[in-house]
Each structure stands twice: as C-alpha cells, then as structure tokens.
Length: 414
Image (tube, rainbow, N blue to C red; front, top):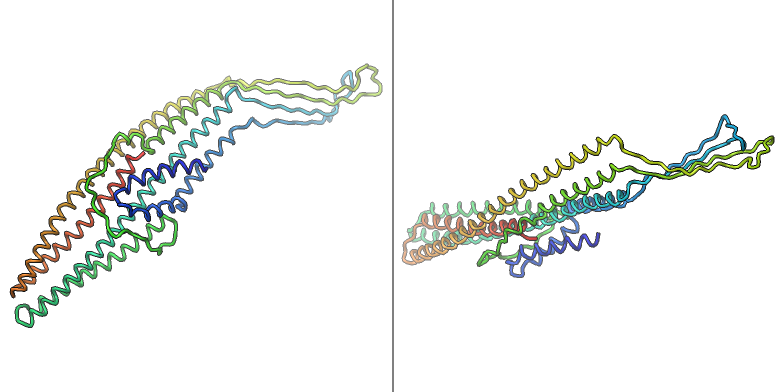
C-alpha cells in the first residue's frame, strides 16, 4: 500500500508541477489543498480499498483444493480372512495441473493492476476538479473587486453630478440614474457572494471537510506571456487508455488460466480400514488393518465449457480494443477543444486589455470635460457600463485560460 501511494503521489506531483507552474510561486496553498484531498476524499479512499481487495485476491487464489476426509462405520460388519471390518477412514487431496495456481495469481494480479489505474485516474481528476473550483473562486472574488471599484467610480460621478446640479449644469435625473446603476452593481455583488459560498461548499466537500471553512485564494492571476508546450503524443500514454491495456492483459491471463484449467487434475490419498480379529481365526496375520494408498485423475472429457470461455475471451479483447479506440477519439476531441478554447481565452483577454485602456482614456476625457464645465452623464453611464463589461470579460478570460490549461495538462501529462 505504501509503494502504491508513493507511485500515485509521484505522478500527481508531476501533474501538479506542470499544471500550476505559471502561478509564480503562489500555488503553495493550492498544493496543500490537493494533498489534503488525497488524504480525505472518500472517492479516492473507495478506489484504494477496491485496489486492496483486488490485491488480496492474489492470496485467495494461491491455495489448493480442500483436502477431503471421510469416515464410516460398518453397521453390517463384513467378514474377511483376517477378521471383521469395523470402520473406515479416507483422505484425498486433489492437485491442479502444473502452473495452474501461478496462472490464477497472474490473473488476479492483472485485475489489481487495472484497479491501480482507477486510482491514478481518480487522483488526476481530483486535481483538476480542485484546481477548476479554485479558479472559479478566484474569478468570483476578482469580479466582486471589479464591482466595488466601479461602484466607487459611480459615487465619484454622483458627487460631480450633485455639484453640477448646484450650478445648473445637470438634473436630478442624472443623479438618480447614477444611484440606480450603483444599486444594480450592489445587487450583482450580492449575487456573486452567494455564488462564492456555493462554490466554497463544493471546494470544501472535495476535501471532505466542513463547508464553511474559508478558502485562501491568490490575490491575482496573470495571463502567461506564452503557452506551455503541448506534446500531444503523450495522449497515447494517458491512464484512461493504459487502463484498457491492463484490462486486455487481464483477459490474456484469463485465457492462460482457462487453458490450464482445461487440463486434467490429479490427486492422491489413502483408505484405512480397521480390522478386529475373531477368536476362532488362526490365520497368522489375523486382525491386521488395511491401508491402501490411492491416486486419482480428473479428466475434463466434456470440455465445451473451456472452448466457450476461449471464445468469450476473444470477444472481450475485441470489445476492449473498440472501447479504447472510442475513448482515444473522445480524449483527442477533448484536447483539441481545450486547446482552441484556451487560444480563444487569450484572444479575448488581449482584446479586453485594449478595450479597458480605451475606456480609461474615455473616462479621462469626461473628467477633463467636467473641468471645462461640460459633462454628459449619459456618456458617463455608457462608459461605466462598457468598462464594467470589459473588466468582467477580462477576468472571465483569465479563468477560462486556466481552466482549459487544467484540462490540457490532465490529458498530456504522464
């Protein structure tokens, strides 16, 4: 079990390292969460127990058939030359064909190997689930910060509008519009707070702990200057595909076992018969007990069962190959989609950077217009709404980029 955990943790560390390298040293908290999930997540624990059960079956099959003992008492006592038979004791031990037990062990081990891949897959998926939930929490907090910033901006414009009313350059309607917009932003912020709590529950439950525990999230995620390399050939070595290889091998071992079991089995034993000498017998060896060693042979003359098992194994291997190809196609599609979506996220981010800069420039122009005595608060609201949209879209783009990166790493990291 310890060796198993070391192997899985090693693979997980490699995945984690490539998955979060662009956090610039701020991923320590996320790594701590993932390690905690490895220890406490009930799904992982269930898979590990399944693997332990499968491994223990190796010991289960490493046994001989039951030794048979029997005893009988002669109600009607047969008479022999040496005396009267009183009771009989027998013992017999059957032995499978040479190598059958080893084949059973190999078959059980191959099934355990397939279960091992289930643990590897489950831990990789858990890393992705935790990371994506983490990025959604970051996105939520970042959007709340954007809303707070924009509400403060509207309050500044509200102050300008109140001042303009005093000198007759604005109306109370302008103030109400600015106040209503602030109310809308406050509402959005409250909705985001509730969504954050829901995502916080999801995150904590992945770690199998109380839902109200606060999550430490990084203050800022930056868009990496360049995308990391994507060695798509690694997809062929993905654990979800390796599992099918292990299942294929288990069927091969099943057929080896089937061939062994189709051979004869043999056994050895003995019969012991107790003899009681009669007083009227003068034979020199009267009363001598009978001991008879025996050898037995079990031949599967009607072997249709084993031929059918061979055919089933052939069909099962074909099924596994078809399932593997179908899963490979799905993973290739998933990888291609994630790559394109990540490119789209970068394009969107770059566009929002330009838009935000231009919105800031427009805001500066409005401020200068106020200083010259002219300002259109309808333009203020338009610019504010655009700026809010651009900032929200920028945050969404960063989240999308990181989430798609987790999918890519899940698929290509060995």
